[in-house]
Image (cartoon, rainbow, N blue to C red; front, top):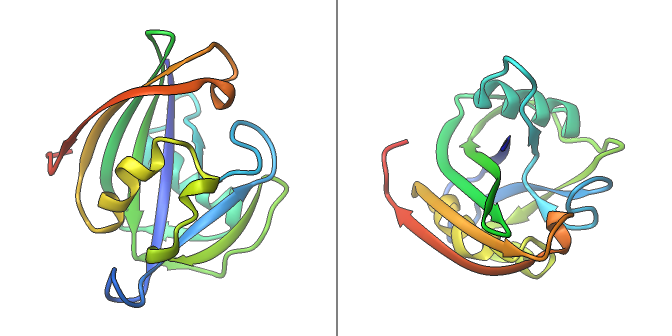
Length: 163
């Protein structure tokens, strides 16, 4: 099973009024053309936290610190384990987000996240994560590889868990 990460840098104060989240528009690879948080696959010997820090640096040039684990999501494809994704959020970072070959970063109001341009499951768990909740989830897709062309069919979520 693939081990991967997502990192959601946040700025501003109130999630309802002026809080923004840094999203990327993927320029290549899995989910190309869609929005998500910076992240990617863990390298051998790398912890998920180290991966989230490295991927955020590589994709958008931010040095993130004080990562808080917000979720652990398991993705099944045709009833087999495909990916475990460790989700982090942080309000601590240095630098300005810049585009890379892989990603174009955009600060987006938490109230205006473009869920219609994201993975089908994101609308189910990301709002809670952006509100400060923790989540463990399992998402089932059918239709074979690649995952971004498979159909989202079902899910289970557990909120406010210890991670």
